[in-house]
Length: 93
Image (cartoon, rainbow, N blue to C red; front, side):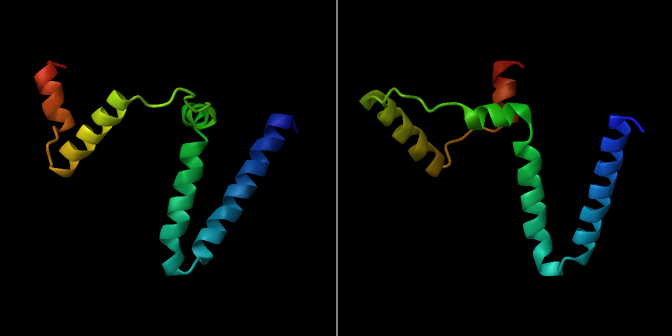
């Protein structure tokens, strides 16, 4: 058996054990398990992993930056938003 075949067999066995564990979960724990599996799946994506591992921005926010952020938050709270489809239509894309 090649190493690729052994790896595939191990993955199949692991997935079968995971299926058994999911089947054995109490109904009240299914949503928590779903959220955790979604978290694992999302964070395994190379792009998401790169973003999470990226260093923070060392440059502090300026007063103008803070004002722009505050303006955006107030607009959002007031419901002054545009849907994705409306924005695409406005931009012609």
